[in-house]
Length: 227
Length: 227
DNA sequence: TGTACATCAGTGAACGCGCGTTCACTGATGTAC
DNA sequence: TGTACATCAGTGAACGCGCGTTCACTGATGTAC
Image 1 (tube, chains in turn blue, yellow, green, red):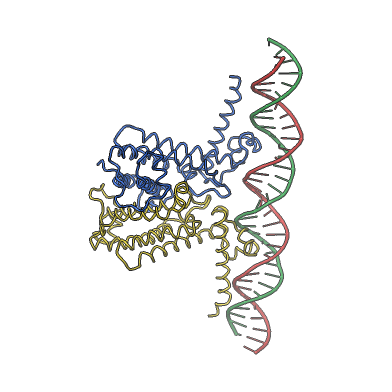
Image 2 (image 1 turned 90 degrees about the horizontal axis):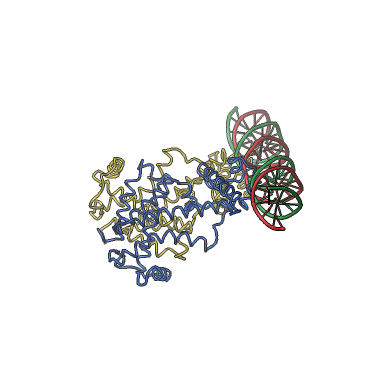
């Protein structure tokens, strides 16, 4: 327990740093994040920040990991609520958009144009969070499949090896077409969210929520047959 | 005709500037574009560039407009080829991805995270190119509707005023649901393209083309009934 | 409980860098007569 | 066809800025005995 005092303060400072960094990103984009800017915001000398992060790159990595984790949490939680498969998938898609719209800068940290000079962490670290969030959707899909209400397309191209492998890993016998179907659906609602976030729907929709919800229903119609 | 000589050189220089600027963007992202960098690349002093652009902002605006125009051209051309409605819409969607994949930096100039400090041009300029590209799709859709093969969703939410207005403008009697349907479809393939471009599909697909094409067919099934 | 020492948090000055933009200028190209 | 003048393209030096990072340092917090 001797670790406490200094460590608590340290944790609080890290939180303060992240908060200031997110503020900076929120107002000027990820590329405008700077050590000096954060230091200024929390009233510390620039050099002091090097006690907490080895450099700008590490701070950014931390923020991205946080964001991805948060989004995955929001989606997973929504998908875990009781209800029909359709209700749970809908809830997950709605949570995806809600999270994105409520903190666009963090969403774009994960899914926006990569920051120049910042190379995303290697394979392992990239794969993990994608799968983690994906699993929220796949889990419900597997359950729907077991219940016989998942409708993969009748005629389908030759499945790719990677699709077969992932399907087998999700649940023995799970159809590889359904893997593609779910990823395609992700592309669908993800696209709607990014278009909204970046203002490409603003010329038609002042508030695209109703539009989004209707599209979600279309997506669900393409995946489930539980009415 | 006295205008020629100097003007031809000037046009060539502008082309050279843009080319160098795109190179810079291709390798470091839009945020890394700089007057000095471009000047260096074409062997001119930084100050000299101010004979051609009033500043960095103007150059960037020009590049974005070019990119949007090019993309619109590629899509329009594809949609204008002879063929069934389904073939033409498919060609347009394939052209959208091909253009994006072949020059990701230019696609992201239009649809990526906005460059910090760069505010997109006002209303008019933003609306025009969106509609211009959209018209390629809408035109085919209107023809399909006239041919009776467009299938807007049976049950639909109350259409919004903006949807009704746009539908009326496209063609008297054109169903507002179809407007939403087409925009939703745009979100679908746009999402697939951005996910691919930013590497979020790489963990599963080495080459997502087959996946994309299959999704395009799903999209078309949701829009057309011409089989 | 008290003291000697080690670790940690944070400072302030300094480094070298690339940036956008302005300014006064030189020399070449075009124009009017 | 030739000359006087205006316009244009491009230079080079300079400005002030914010940046990431390093370094030697001071003072506070924790640890061992």
